[in-house]
Length: 331
Ligand SMILES: NC(=O)c1ccc[n+]([C@@H]2O[C@H](COP(=O)([O-])OP(=O)(O)OC[C@H]3O[C@@H](n4cnc5c(N)ncnc54)[C@H](O)[C@@H]3O)[C@@H](O)[C@H]2O)c1
Image 1 (cartoon, protein in one colour):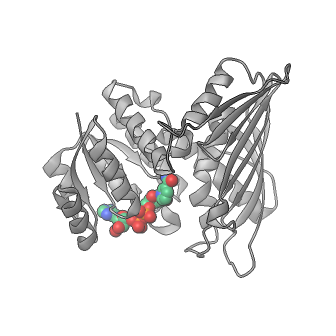
Image 2 (cartoon, protein in one colour):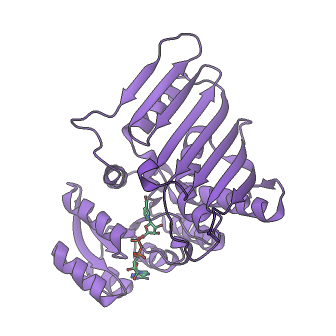
Image 3 (cartoon, rainbow, N blue to C red):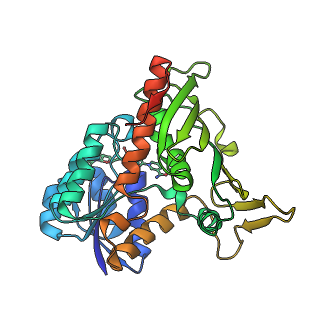
């Protein structure tokens, strides 16, 4: 059983903690928030010791695994310090997305995890669904073949304008870019247009063209301007042998083989299937715990810090493209 702590007890930290409490591979041993009331409330609710200083918690409890569920500027500036502290204390770390709003800090965290030989994962929870796994298996079985294109859409309602014009691009798209990379690999070049919905100062809807390293092409439409009830996540991946479409994240995956009119469909079952978005967190967290329990190496971690960094570099290139009007190579 892995001893687990959570740093950052907002809604998302409390969700991680709840999941650790029910996962058979984990024992939640402590929580931390630098806001004393948040730390105390979470500690009392969860029945574990609470702290306001992560270093004190790490020294006192010596956990095996630490979730870093802080937020900050552009929903990602606060991850750096506690992640470095947890890695330094010898923990395997599961950090929230975006890995960081700052590429240099993201690179430093990935490098430090590598140096310490600790498993560093990012909560790229949208790839942790049965529908995505079924589509990935179709791909592994050759049912897509040489890739041609990927069309991705991620639209949710987030009506409040936040702390930066790039908030939507940086905070939402770690998920969409990760799904595109999951099926099509690394992205070489991007070109981005974006718009601000009436009354907004944030780039709230974006259209991003991509060229993958393998030569396939891709497109992402992302938006914070769609009413929450009409949220969409759709991914279409096509190759010379067939086309897979994932709809509503975990609800459905359909294979359209090139040589027959007979389709294959995975449909989320009513009994035993995902019942909501939180199940993507449950699956992602359990997968991380299972990989560590099984002795996975840092390089084998599904949805790793390396993946989180790669997605963030694509987003950074899209922002540069938006600002300069040019096609930008992903560094
Ligand atoms: N994976 C997903 O689908 C998903 C969905 C929503 C949000 N998120 C991510 O989850 C993260 C948290 O979101 P939230 O809404 O709970 O944020 P939040 O701001 O409400 O909570 C973050 C908490 O971290 C605490 N904190 C910051 N730095 C700290 C430190 N060094 N030590 C201790 N506590 C510290 C803050 O005091 C705050 O209480 C964000 O990075 C966000 O992008 C992920």
